[in-house]
Image (cartoon, rainbow, N blue to C red; front, side, top):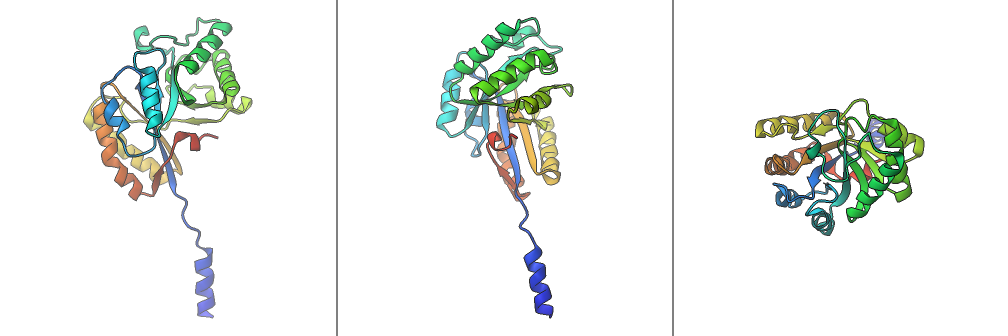
Length: 240
């Protein structure tokens, strides 16, 4: 009897599902600091490449060659910030519907191997239903997903993506919104906590001023996150 009971208990134990974590690195396309170090990370990640910049095509092609996913990192108007931070071809609230559609398609065409789009800045645009309906409609036409970087809690991306049946996901943690090693290390602890309590984690880091620091912290975090049961996956596996 004891043997039967024990056997039943064993049979009822389901193997624990692996946690999934997707890393996205923004701001490729302009020979930014940390580009080389990021591309050397021994995990799958998405390289989010800005369009119309000096190394846009080179960075996208190199990331693809190394087996990384490529996203179009589409510049979008923020509520605050310098216009020059946006870069060329930005989507702004003053543009007509026709111009928005034209710019989104041109940006997609400029970033080789892009499988999805995420927003660069964009706190003003991603809360604007008129504009985002056009952007997400283009995603549907071009068979791309949209990753919401979540630069505003007022984002309408999830709502419109669901309505238009476009796959989407959203960022949970910015690793390097402050450019210091101590802050990036604190964000890494937040990632660990998120992994412990959630089945899916998406984090965003950047090349540029924090690039080398972020790459170094991420490299050292990989074993720790794997010990927590996390599996690094391409972000395309997490879109719904």
